[in-house]
Length: 412
Image (cartoon, rainbow, N blue to C red):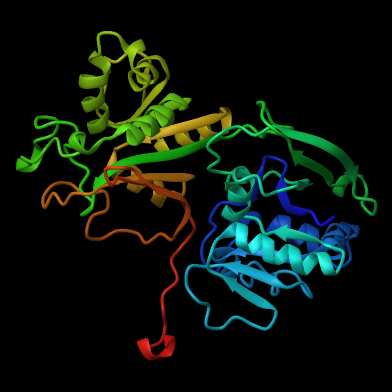
């Protein structure tokens, strides 16, 4: 029977990539993971050999495919056919590489047909594709190689799962060629039906931004005409008429599952004056979460926050946010707070971006991203549209964007 598996090499603190990951430097400072596994003179090479012997075909997202050379991998799996999921053709796809335009399930079916002929298994390459395969129930097995290094930050594995998934541990084995200081622990798990829990959970708080914007990117004054009239803005209240049951359910779930909240000062004051003044917070999941869970405000001038459960982050906000992420588990949710979101992105502190785009053009007001700023590539994790046309998209930051270096004719 051909199995569909993924194989993750991660630091002991749960990161598959270190800080500073970007185009041209896909592992950031996580090259210690790669070097440890790939040192030709090390017995740790048994990990790579296990992967090579088992794999009969590989399924990858386009982003992972395009960064494979930069990670030092060259061919993602020498000798194994590669199925790349992409909405657009890949003009320079090599022999043995198949571009699949009709989704992950189709790619896995095609890869399984090929791998089964060789009596081998299908590997789903790490990244957002692995998370999506796990979410859809398409993975049979997860292999985790823990590398004896602490990266202290970076990209954790399995980001963006909407619900907890119980895993059954089927074996834990030492690398047979390793020795004590360099010994990896291989944990093989299989997703099981229902339930709650994880076989292994590294404590790290995921920082997620959730932002409501118009089609032209405006985020100001969405909740009411007087919510935010700064800079003469007089078109407030544009979001509420478009909120339908699906959008409301989504927001209730996102806020209700947050462990803590992080605000810029302006958004904090708006929320404190509205959600903080709700007579019975228990009657609304958003109000209940906001009033009863820890709140943090990045502000150098706020001295006396009136909302109970609020902590002001004044000095070295970046260090304070990193400390929060490393000390706790769960989700640190950043509602609105456009200026803070841009700063967090520039500092590499954002793990996930939830963007709700409303089918309306406002034509004035503060935008999430202004006319100039840092450039950031995004990897789409999920996307759906509600009955009233609100698109709900989840992204992960993916380093710097790639830019064409030739003319339009070079792409034809």
